[in-house]
Length: 499
Image (cartoon, rainbow, N blue to C red; front, top):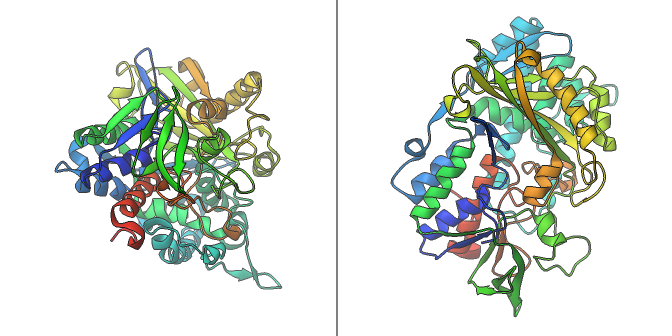
């Protein structure tokens, strides 16, 4: 197995339980892939995702791979309110966790009578898109013919003189929600997954539906604690990890993958090879074979966004009643979307501020760990130059200044409380994973441009797992990817997905 990301580890644990001897080769010195951690002076920060959606994916993994369920291995808590949104006009609203009625009521109270009803009607349409795409895009292997997924499953309302439906998520917000703040709420979900609302298909409506239906969850100790638990489950099932050992090539004989070549020149044989590292890096570096046009098979080449995360060490206790997650919306939406489209940094980004009330992430009760994240353009899916590939540290620091300024709307006294900060950019993502971009979950529509690579590769015995493979990026989706790969290897070509 190549790479020790969450998707690869999910596949490894399942395969080990099925009787396979599994060895994972990871080029880095730790496991978890994008689910990383920064520790300094008693502070700790998640450098990847900070919340878990669809925890059922990992509950299923732990049930299927051992007697201890997930809740005995990590402490899961629902985040309530799920989020607080501060809009450009200063109006704020806190949305309860997984409560449709509560969300409608909160929106009516904050944005005016009728706002909640419009959002509720939108979610009803989003549910139709979810029901139409959930199984084929999350629970089943991709079929050979992905043409049907080019069509968008969202039943967009037909409005205007020509009665044409919106063709982008931004268009859905503008036409159907009819309030710039509701539109900003919608678009923030796309941004959180790295999608540009101006180009994302209406099917991206499933993202707020998924979150507001199944809830937002926090893992005590940070999401890195979930990676620790999955790693330990693998070890308990006798999965072997070889860290600090890059794989330099996949050995193919007779049209079938039969092993891997390590950096030192050693060749290790295998009945199956699972590639869990980012596909752009694997093809760019020649690890995976490719004789066709372009830079490997489809792997969500439309992905053009990454993340800047600022880790803030603060003096002073977290105030009573502080909200775990606050989204501070941009005051200039047009500039933000133009920056994403043109590959530049905007003047005032939408930021997500995470303030977990977790004693494991701070030195003591008189300090607080906070992360501030913004979605930014990175260029092409395999670009190694441009905005983040060069010496852009000064520009990154200036952008971080603007992010922290925005975060003051979520953290009282932020400037006075700041002890130090660490700025992480797509250049750090590239250094750790080999790709600047953070892939999003598979979405139908957009001509199929947001479909990741299928799990079975074009070479027999070779499989793809993780965020760049079906069903795409995101913590839950990576776990689903591992389940699909394990099913395909154990049950063969007749495997039709989870039941």
